[in-house]
Length: 355
Ligand SMILES: [Zn+2]
Image 1 (cartoon, rainbow, N blue to C red):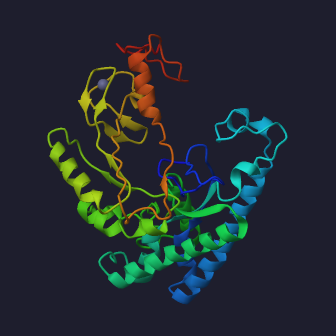
Image 2 (image 1 turned 30 degrees about the horizontal axis):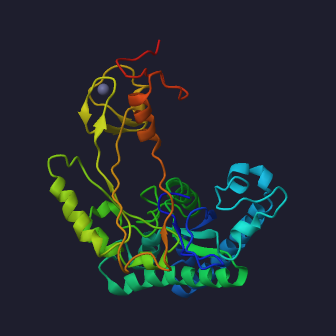
Image 3 (image 1 turned 135 degrees about the horizontal axis):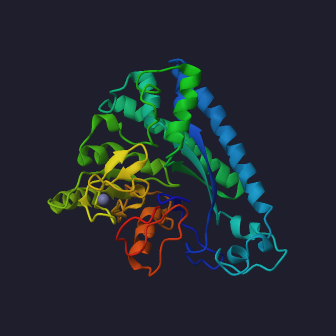
């Protein structure tokens, strides 16, 4: 599960609300732009292909559940026998005890809602309410199918606004091979993440939140609204303004603002984004070490008191740890050199030991 995954509310047979020890069994993500491209501008064809693909995704998720059920408690004792999944199973007991009756979730993910609308209505559709309704109808279709699957099979199928870090690239590459460079869809070398605003338009955080706030109601398996800023150390009130604005509008907001620090030269500021990752702009030595320096992501989390927000009592799953932060913290606090493969920065860092 990623940082944006949500578990639906669930009570045990005694009526206790349970969130700890529950789990998600996996995600299958739908390439929505491909369906739009295959439709060739014919909306009725789009809906029929979408229905077919959603069925395929449902089959894939059912297969995933069956594979997970093949595990035995002895395969992962920490999870099944020692209680990480909330119960202590004996060796040989079926692990499905922990999954069924909607205790676990599986996620029907999607990517590229922006491109779907762009395929039918052009790239600048954001202020057209009819087109917006069309995009909502797409997600409603996914949600209705997820609900039916949940009732039919007894596992919690939920619609997931997939993070798609690598899929934004992969799906676009595959679609470019098949359809060539299509304006606003494959010509930008990525698919837009889940329901997110087209980043090329550089909306203000307020515009972005207002545009996206309708979609989480149809993405109960997980979502995030996400804004990236330049350095705001001189203007923290700007962040407060966005957070205050978000509070009654969206359920979950991520904030990225760089506070980069180079442990080789002491530079503090904004690293350069390069093909190899973020690099210190000041430090001339040991370029191999630079990506190990810290780019700090500050994340703000907002959960609403009432909708708009995650439906069905959904709540965020556990947070991901950020490898970069953990790594930098390790450098700062440990008394020995780093053991991460390839890293030669001693701790505390005073220079490069690469020979
Ligand atoms: Zn440096």
